[in-house]
Length: 328
Image (cartoon, rainbow, N blue to C red):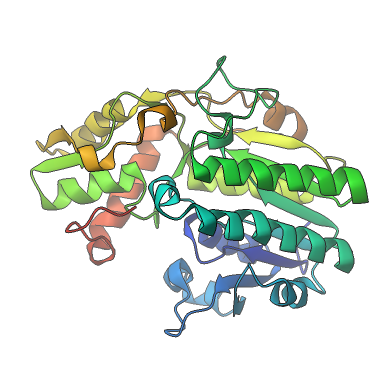
C-alpha cells in the first residue's frame, strides 16, 4: 500500500523518525524527510541509514515553527507522519516556551498545511506522558489527561489541536500515543541508553528516580504502528495507544540491562536527574486493545531481544554517547 506513495516525515532525523523513514523507503514509499536546518548540514540519525536507503530519500531542511516552510514542504504529499517535537522532559522545565513553539505551534503548522494541501492522512504523534500518573491501569484512551510537566502540557495542547482539526475541518488525522519506545539510535537523554552507555564506560550508573514504572516498546514495533496508522482505512479521528501492556520499574530495567551486559556496575540515584516531586509520573502501562482491534497491531519483539539489540548498537557506536555531561 506504500509503493510509490509520496510520504513526508517530520522529525525524520530523530530516533523513531529515522527508523520510520528506513521502513517506509524499504516498502517503496517516496519519502521526504523534514529535518531541522543547521549550518553543519547535519541530518542526525539519517546518517546511520544503509546507503541504499539514503539514496532513495529526499531531505528538506527547515523549521517546523515556520508555517511557510511547512506548507511548501507538505504540498504534493499524500501522507504526513508528524513526529517533530521537543521531547526531553527535564529541558521543558528550563525552556517551556520552546515547547509551546515547537510542539504546539509546529503541530498547528502541519495541520493547517495538510488541510490546505488536501493530504489524505496525517498521523500525529502523542505520548503516554499526557496521561500523567495513572488513575487506573492499564491506561486506555479514555483516561483523563494531566499536564504534569511543561512537555506533557504542550503535547496535550497539540493533541487537542489535532482533534479539533478533524472535528472542525474533517482533516483526516489519526493520533498515535506511543508509550515509551527504546532501541538503537536513541540518545542518552532516555534512561535505557543512559544505563547502557554508563555501564560500558564506568563502574557506576547514575539515574534519577528508580521506582517509576514504564511500559517499553521496541522501536520496530512502534514503527509498525505508525505504518498501520498511515494506511488502515476508516480510522480518521481516532486516538490509539501503542504499548506492550507490561511494565517494570526503572530500577528493574537497570538490573536487567546490567545482567544482560555481565556488568557489576553500581546503581546510584543522582539528585540532578530527579524530576520535581509533583511532576514525576509514577506508573505508565498501556491498554493496547484499541490498537489490536483497529490496526491489527501487536508487539513482536521481546524485551530482552530488544535490549540486546540496543546494547549491541551502543557498543558499536560509543562515540555517539558522552558521559561527562547529563543529557537533558
